[in-house]
Length: 310
Image 1 (cartoon, one colour):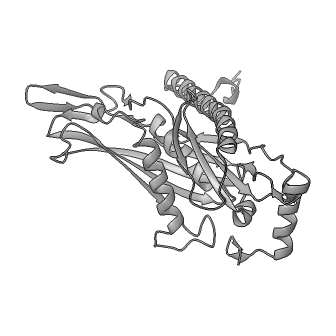
Image 2 (cartoon, rainbow, N blue to C red):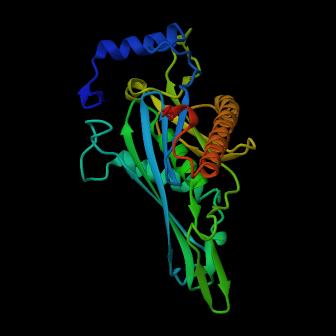
C-alpha cells in the first residue's frame, strides 16, 4: 500500500508515473530525469537561522551555541549535535510529539556527513582544555514535504552552521573572558569543506530480449516518486569533487558502472549547490554590512515627506 501525505496513492497513478519515466523519459511534474528543482535559501535576522526549499519542500534550521564543560574522554574538542523534527505541519503522515523513523534516519545521515567527514573543526571549538568548550546545536524542522526532504535538511544544517557566529573569547591566565556582540564582532565556525548530499530515486527498467536493463535513476525525487521508487541512492560530495559519503538503504541492486555515472552527476550537482550557497552567504553578508552602515538612518530619502511652511 502506497501512502503519500497521509492519503493512499492509487495503483493507476503509480503505474502512470512509472510508465512516464520508463517509456517517455519524463516525469509527472514535467521535469527531465536529471532535472532538479531550484534551491532557495533565505537567511533570518539572527545568525544561524536559515530556510531552505527545493520547490514546495521547505525546511527551517536554527543553529545555537553555549559554553559547557567537555567530557573527560574528549577534553579538547567541542560538541556538535543535530536534532531533526518531522511534525504534521510538514505532512499528515508524521506524528506529533513522537520522533519518526524518517526523522531519526535523516538526523543520523546529517551527523555522519558533517561529523564523520570532519567538516567542522571540533578542536577549534575548545576554549580551555578540559574546562570550557563550545557546544553547537542545530535544530532542523520540516515545514513542507514534497519529496527529497533529506537533502533539504542536510543543506539547511550546513547553511545554518556557515551562517552561525559565536561570541569572541579571550583566555588570560586561568580564566576565559567572553565578549558580547557589542564589544567584539562574533566569529564564524571553522568549516573545512561542505559535504552536500545528492539523492537519486531508482526504478526498474523494462526487460529487452530476456535481459534486464540497468535501472533508471531520477534526480531530486518528488513525494510521489519516493512512494513508488524501487530504491534510492544518496551520494555526498563536497565542493572539491571529493566523495564524502554513500548511503543506500536497501532496495534495487545496482552495478558499479551505474554507481560511477551517478557519482559523476553528483559531483556536478554538488558544485552547483555549493556555488549557490556561497553566493547567498555573500549576498547576506553584504546586506548586513549595508544595514550597519546606515544604522542611524531609519528611513530612506524617498520615503520622507517634506512640507513647505512658507
